[in-house]
Amino acid sequence: MDAYKLFIDGEFVEAQNGETFGAVDPGTGAVFAQVARVGTADAEAAIGALRSESG
Image (cartoon, rainbow, N blue to C red; front, side, top):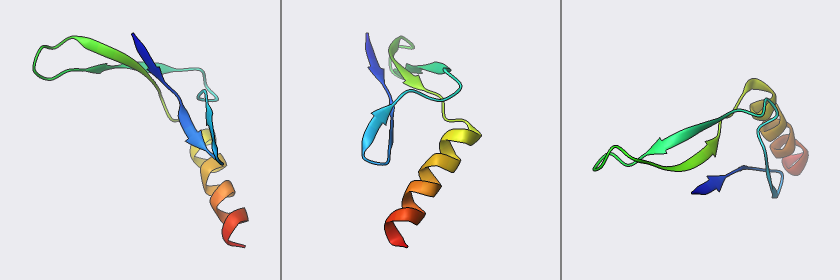
C-alpha cells in the first residue's frame, strides 16, 4: 500500500502528530493509500517556511 507524507519546506516529512488516514477509492470503497494527517503544528511549519522564503 502506498504511503504519502507532507511536503513542507522542500522536503517530504511525516505529520508531527504521527497520524495518518486511509485514502478511499470512491469507486470500490477500498483503502488504497495511507496519507499523513495535517495538524496545527504542520500548518504552522508550512506557513513559517513560506514566510521565510518571501521575506
